[in-house]
Length: 605
Ligand code: ADP
Image (tube, rainbow, N blue to C red; front, side, top):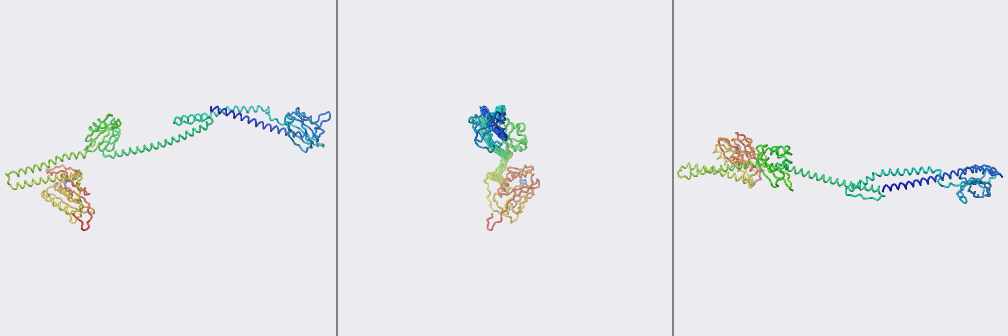
């Protein structure tokens, strides 16, 4: 349809072109002919006017030169020639067949001129050229008329016009073919745009036949608009998805950082039993690097039979969401460690995602539990022995047969000693329990340290003398005051002095000393006793920790004295340090902040 229209336009326009060309040619031909007639007419008139009238006019019985000259011309446009007198009468005339010599105006001509003669009796218009005869009788004028060019197509030019028309007719189909060829990609493009528009649910609007190229441009513009809008949308989508991706990545990294910071080790296994996630804490717990665990089945990295057995139970997809299991074991990779491993099935939305394993260091709890058990056994023993002794001596006192006062006194002393030991144990236990429940809060007052130390020294003297140990005091009188809870601080001090006496040998010494620094005071309990190894020194302040007794002498104890002393010092914002060497005695030092000097009248306890 579109192509037919183009063809029609081409035919019409080619016909218009041919018509225009022919018109222009005709016009040109007409002008040329008129000019030719003029040149010829004027030339002939001038040349004939130069002849004498006697030559031009015919003699009786003979044709004049005029007649013979003009009669011989083979010019189809020649109309007539005449010599006209002053009175307008023609003295001689010759005319072509069908032409009539028009009358002349009765006047004498001074120069050559030309005029148009209306067709009148002649069929065609005539162009007349005239001029005065040059001879003495100048009153005569010579007139020569030529038919004006008729403006019709000259048949002799017909082949030329036919050639032009042929060329135009041949060019038209050629141009049509070329245009058709050139238009083909545009048509295909139009179709493609239509298809693309349809594919994007944006139907491209149809245009009427007259608007094809503009329609195509419109389609193209709309398609480009739509495409750039789509690109912008996609860019925005892509920015949004990038942002949400970054957010997700941030969230995931944050989650991983949180999981990595957990004190417990985490493992995530897929339903097939392969590790998909592991935190760095598993290395110190299991003794296996994370790199060896990741993407590996349990058998490849787990050496502990208890853990393997538990994980084997969680393998597969049919785990119940509530199924959880905890075991306690000693990992083969880290000797001395005790672990809790809890496995939990990961399920949700009727899917099994695998198993979460939490590994927790239970060494402390295990040791505490062990120590607790040992302690119960020990306390039971500690209570049982004095009770047995008290029972025995009580029976003895009740026995009416014993009248010896010395025996009675000894029995009473033994009973008192055993009661004291039991009271000390029970007191320590009560203090530990108070400390752990948080109900032991120091009520601090400004205390004169030298008085406090002297009291403690006095109390310990009898025990030292009983064991043949010298107890020295090196405390200056003007020692700085400190802010302490007097009763609590005395418990700490007594424990240190009792230990210095207890873990000493007969004939040894114990010194209670105090030194004042710029900002703090150091109280030192120095003994020449059995000392301890560096390993034991690290642990003596732990609850229930006791150094294994090796010698013959069994000193007895509960592993609570130093724990309590250390806690009390810390409650006073102080520090307990221990220097000791096995077999060469120990120094236990309490470092306390000094109190600023009191203004006069301040209360000192
Ligand atoms: P205990 O009731 O066993 O004395 P402590 O907590 O007071 O408990 O002491 C813990 C351990 O520290 C003791 O078992 C002992 O081995 C060691 N110890 C404490 N004081 C001294 C000391 N002055 N010299 C050597 N060892 C000491």
